[in-house]
Length: 166
Image (cartoon, rainbow, N blue to C red; front, top):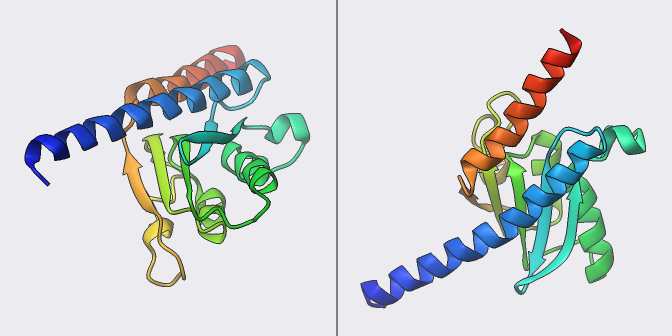
């Protein structure tokens, strides 16, 4: 493949990643309006959205209702299979250990996330779950897509929360 064609492929992939990340950001903003931590996830199969979700832990009174889990459940129902072997998952923030484990269990081949989570991220920041040799599946990871916008969502949410509680 020539470098010009490779460059076009990279540009097209980057544009698609940004497109779907914007959907995840929209879900994160909707979650925030509902009083949730603003995390959003979009699941795409064959360039088509099969699920979009924001955090629902408080809304559902469910500690497992992170955006990634809610979106994976919806996608599996829509696809009719708990294995999402052709899906790309877009998350505004680096998934935690629970969510990264769910990606492994669902056999998701690719994760694209916006901003690292230095405290609870389990993909790159801690644990390396998506690429662990101890597990039976690996997830290709693309990070930093619309990173500043994703990071700002979280920072502003917690800044406002500290001010309101302070």
